[in-house]
Length: 338
Image (cartoon, helix red, strand yellow):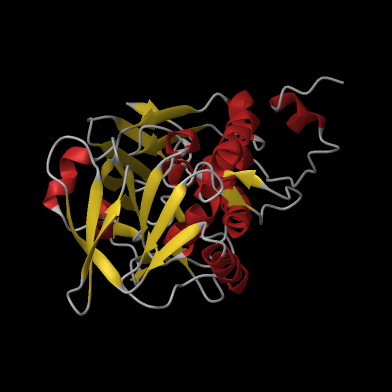
């Protein structure tokens, strides 16, 4: 049994920043995530994709953001329980008993759910014959851009991820972008860039087409696509990339008696507590009037939730707001020596 001030469910950027906000207040946290590494969607789906809306950081990747957050929380020595999932929670006289699928038991006054959109996996192309090519020449996320250099790439999808990677890979690979509709869902700037590259012959666009089949054998050589008139074409292909969004599953969270709205958890905006005292939800998984699904919004939510966590974990101490720039106590916790 592990006693801790806070159990954080989810090791994405918002969960990691919650560790920081709790740590500077002197609170100990344990982090549980069903993925095999910290970083959440930033690492799992777009580690190399640029992020442009982190305050004071003009541009960073999902990986660099995660790496910096991990560096920032290193002084607090929090323990990560990866490839693990919370199965059940019980209230025991004001203390939450948290049990995982690996039979670990945590006792804590606070639970912060920072699980992004819950347990997730990419939606896949509807061909069983692609299974044998997965992680070799069929992918649903990009973890290493170098694997895609100087290749013939067929990208399926019509949203931001498909368009962004089509633009990126057109710099050094032959790209065919395939979408089942005529229109793409992207920003005006992205669509304008896509049209420029199409005119220059750097990107081949096939709409409205869907995947029909691939070649037999152990090596991917071509993909057959079909339009609404049943016209088919063969596209020479080394790699298939599919971007169709995620299948969202809340899993056991849906059984914890929390107030839900469209697969998100309802919270107040004072401290982002749910209808259960001591259980908080931050990041994409929470909802409230005016909610914006941005990382920076999640950081704000983590900061306010951490204050209430302190009050519950240290009921005999008065919470004192302190600036990190002037508090020696906080600087000592961060290991800063002057």
